[in-house]
Image (tube, rainbow, N blue to C red; front, side, top):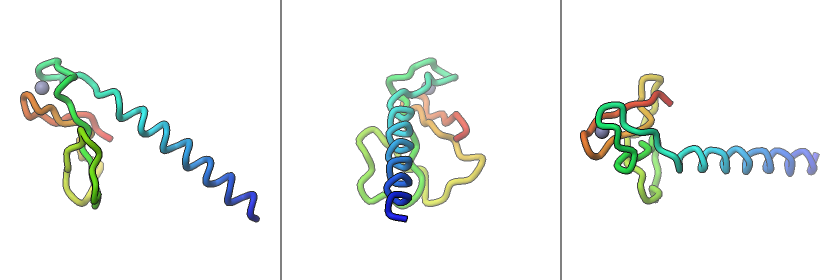
Length: 79
Ligand SMILES: [Zn+2]
């Protein structure tokens, strides 16, 4: 039972790592082609958003974009 929990936690840590890595590489903006101004949009109630994260509201839906371009203000990438 205890080992099962530990394994579950390892899996979760692994998933978090992968998620972090995925977020570190923004996609280039389809409108202006710039990826340096693209930020990941954070959904949910986050008290301390990470640097380089923009808030997208408290709820996430299937139509919520994943990225926001700060240069041309376009949002893209379905999460
Ligand atoms: Zn753009």
